[in-house]
Amino acid sequence: MIWYIDFLFFLALTLWVCYVALFAFASRIKSKVIFPEAETFLRFAILFPAYKEDNVIKESVVRFKGQDYPVDMFEIVVISDAMEDRTNDQLRAMGISLMHPDEGQRSKAAALTTAMSQLDTQLFDVVVVMDADNIVFPDFLRKLNNAFAFGAKAIQTHRTAKNNTTATAILDGVSEEINNSIFRLGHARLGLPAALIGSGMAFDFNWFKERIPEIKSMGEDKFLEYFLLLDRINTIYLEDVVILDEKIQYSDDFSKQRRRWVASQIDIFCLAIKQTQRALVSGNWALLDKIFQWSMPPRIIMLGVIPLFFLVSLFVADISSIKWFFLIILYMTSLALAIPKKLYTKQLLLALFTLPRIFFAMISSIIHFRSGRSTFIHTKHGAVPGKDE
Image (cartoon, rainbow, N blue to C red):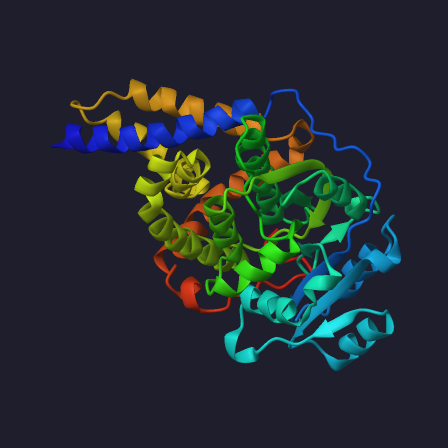
């Protein structure tokens, strides 16, 4: 019986580890997609959902206004929810369009639906979804324009950390870059759609206007991915279009954020797996890939569970420990490949000692994931570091 349980867990974890390894190695393939300079300028709607984001929204908007792109070809819309009147007045004075979502249906998807219901389809070609803390560079829209003018329908840009003030922020930033390598760059290298992140993403305006009202979940990015795959729209990853994103600074906020992520992944997996037979018959390999990806447990859980099985196997005569040892080596090697060289610093080494705390924060997220399914969970941006360093 013990051998049988060991075999089942080893088989499942081996499949997931091999999946990570495949795309981690693929991310190292030297290839770069460069779109030619477009002769026409598309019109962009830039959406900033902002719930109590008075600390960060003004800087983000100011930085976005500095685009190397015709000012009459993009409109910045802040979907202001529970922000101070002073902040709203300052945004209006800057020429920003303000909208206010229904407080009774508070979620990012609901805020985006509110904005799209008020924007004229005839005026825009592309919609860009940002977070209130995101910072972009002057070439952001120009490079998006080149890709959409060339025929793109969905794009994910390269979101990366703008802060490393605490150990949690450092690990969160590294985790995002691992995701960029495996689920975006590695997938793109093998001809598969890139995964969405939640911000710094852009879509064909008409497609987004049609699909966003259908999303009632807190995990709007995963449901957008699902709809893109059903519609067989390839999501392009623009590795050289960088967007700065504030990372979680404290383990308590990490737990709350991951609770929402775990809930949305469970929900989307339960929905998508029903499409398995249809995807097989129709040859929708991108959807099948995503279904398998959504079956994977969080990375921090695998980092804890695989060594745990190895330790247990050392004391159980009926279980071979060597296979678990090699699985640990393969998984760690894959993750190491997925981390950009510039992030291998002394700060990262010190932050690794806080992994047990992050592991238990993730366990808490999984235990309480149901609250992330229906409750709007906000993680504060622009907080002053200090308590979780």
